[in-house]
Image (cartoon, rainbow, N blue to C red):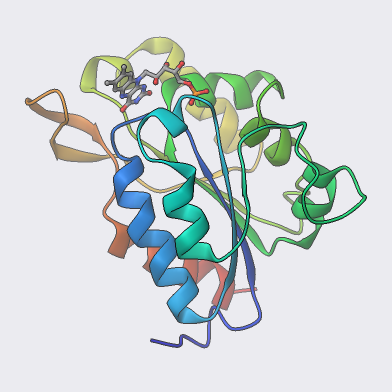
Length: 189
Ligand SMILES: Cc1cc2nc3c(=O)[nH]c(=O)nc-3n(C[C@H](O)[C@H](O)[C@H](O)COP(=O)(O)O)c2cc1C
């Protein structure tokens, strides 16, 4: 259903390697139905959970799985796709990706595109997802603190049922909550 908050908006969605990748398919579908142009990029690990083809079909656009793909323009694409975005969402965001972003690495397509985003103009929303032990690691908590200081926005994680079949903190926020948060961020700008 069209959503005024998403009309004429370009949203980058990055996926990293966690079970919650399946939830992101529904987020992409909702954004597209709302009227947004959605470009998806996936780490190699993310492609092991859900096929890029799913996101290509849902977004109607090529899916970036490598920094060496030049699909849509002659520009180095990570720079051009980052420049066009009104917002970048990374969902799920792994423990590994939180660490990379916190120290400024850019050796995969998701962290590379995130590195080309100007967070003063283009918010980057992170939806962490991992098991409770990973979420409670001092390193993860330190990295999140650093990322907040650096201007990244967070949604979740929630406490609840986890893919490792226990309950705890680290569950990715539900697609509905993430969509509402994106709406709120875009409407406030
Ligand atoms: C079955 C399975 C499930 C996983 N789920 C998660 C997860 O939910 N969160 C997480 O941080 N890492 C998870 N991992 C580990 C990451 O996939 C691994 O750290 C990977 O290197 C992350 O790469 P990326 O950050 O480049 O996507 C999982 C691994 C496997 C094999």
